[in-house]
Image 1 (tube, helix red, strand yellow):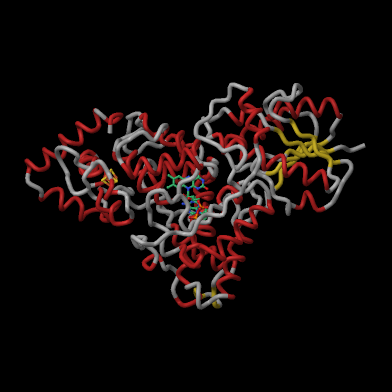
Image 2 (cartoon, helix red, strand yellow):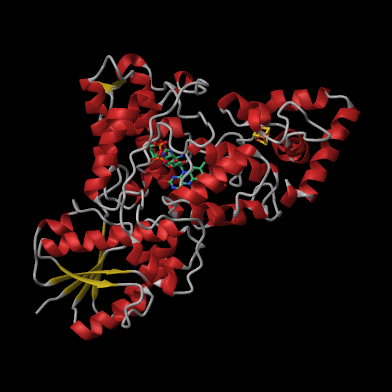
Length: 511
Ligand SMILES: Cc1cc2nc3c(=O)[nH]c(=O)nc-3n(C[C@H](O)[C@H](O)[C@H](O)COP(=O)(O)OP(=O)(O)OC[C@H]3O[C@@H](n4cnc5c(N)ncnc54)[C@H](O)[C@@H]3O)c2cc1C
Ligand code: SF4
C-alpha cells in the first residue's frame, strides 16, 4: 500500500494549501520542534515561542479535521533534533513509500531537503507553498539582462499582473506612487492608538525551552504573549489594522516617538511570514475597507500599504532567490568592526537607539524606520561587519526569516550588496532622526552639536562614513550633493569631525 509522509515546516502554516483540502488516510503530516532550527541563530525567546505555539495550534487544527499528524515536541525522547534524522526514523518505522515537502523559503533548508531527498530510497516530490504572489524566479526573469533591479518597476508589474488598484492597464487615480504624501512626523500632542495585543498563555513552551541549553535573547511575559499564534488571531489583528490604523498608516509610516512601539503599523509580518494569512487576503481586506470608508481612508494610505506587501515583500523574496548564496557573503565596504555590546542590552545613552533596542528586546519587534534609520543606520556608520548585523536582525525579530531579513539588512540597510536593493546607502546624521522623531529632545547627546562634549555620535560618524567610502560612493549621482558639502568644508572642520568620529569608534561600547 502506498503511504506518504509530508513535511510541514514551522513557517508553512497555510491552512488553505491544497494538501489539506482532502482527508487522506494514506497521508501522514510531520511537524517538528528541533535544535537545528532553534540553534542556527541566537533567537529572541518570543520568536521561538511564537513559532512553536503557532505550530502546535496548527497541528491541533489539522488533527481536529481528522488529518493524521505526527508532532515532535522539543524535549520528546524520540526527537532526534534534525529534519533528516526524524524523517529517516519515521520512514523506517512506518514504511512510508513517498516523501513530500513544500518549497522552503530559506536557501539553507532548500539545500538540506534536496540533499535529504537524494539520500532517500523512496519516491520524493516537492510542491509550491501556495503563499506568495510571485514565483521564486519571477523577479529574475523580469529583470533578465538588466544591471539594476528597480523595486518600482517590479511593483508596477505586480499591480498589473494581479490587477490591484488598476483601471485597465493604468494605475487607479493615474499615479503609481504616493510616497511623497506619506512621510510625516507625529504631532507632539498626538497619542497613537494602543496596539491590539493578545494574552496567550505560553508558559508550558517557555518551560520546555528553559529545560534545554538553548541560548535566547530578550524578554517574555509567558502569561500574556502578545503575538497572534493562529489564523483566527491573525485575522483579528488584520481587522484591527484596517479598521483602526490604515487611515493613518501612510502618513506616519516613517514617524518615531519614544515608548510607542507599534504606532499605526500592521504587525502582520509574523502572521504572514509563517503563512497563517496570505498577502493577497491582507491587501484585499485593506482595499475593501478603503472602498467602504472612502471619506475616512485616503488613497495614499492604502497605496502605501499595498506597496509594502506586493511591492517590497515580494521583491525581497525575488532578490533572495536570484542572488543567494553569494548574497550572504557580500561586504561592499569591507566593514570589519564588531557590533557594539549594547545592541544586546539596550544600555546606551543614545535615546533613539536605547528606545529601538529596548523595544526590540521587549516585543521582538521594531517598525521599519527604526530598523532602517536607527539601528541599521548606526551599524553602517560604525562600520560593523554585515555578518554581525545580520546575526542580530535574524535573531531579534519575531518575523525574521532569512529570505526577508538578509535582503533588508545586508541589502537595503547595510548597502553590503553595493546597490542591488538600494540605489544609495540609507545613512543620516541627527537631523533626519530629529525630523522624524521625538527622540532628540530628551537625549543625553545634543543633536545640533557635531564635535566636543555631548556631540551626537550620528553627526561625526555620518561624515566619517562619506569620507572613508569616497572611493566607492564619490561618483554616485544620488549623493553628489553630500560630497559637494563635504568637499567645501574647511580642512580644520573636517579634521575635527574625523577626530570626533575616531574617538567615538574607539569608545563605541561606552556611548
Ligand atoms: C534592517 C531591516 C531588517 C528587516 N528584517 C525583516 C525581517 O526579518 N522580516 C520581515 O518580515 N521584515 C523585515 N524587514 C522589513 C520591515 O521592517 C518589516 O516587514 C516590518 O517592520 C514588519 O512590521 P509590520 O508588519 O508592522 O509592517 P508594516 O509597516 O505595517 O508593513 C506592512 C507589511 O509590509 C511588508 N513589508 C514592509 N516593508 C517591507 C520590506 N522592506 N521588506 C519586506 N516586507 C516589507 C511586511 O510584510 C509588513 O508586515 C526589515 C527591514 C529592515 C530595514
Ligand atoms: S541626539 Fe543623536 S543619539 Fe540622541 S536621540 Fe538624537 S539622533 Fe539619537
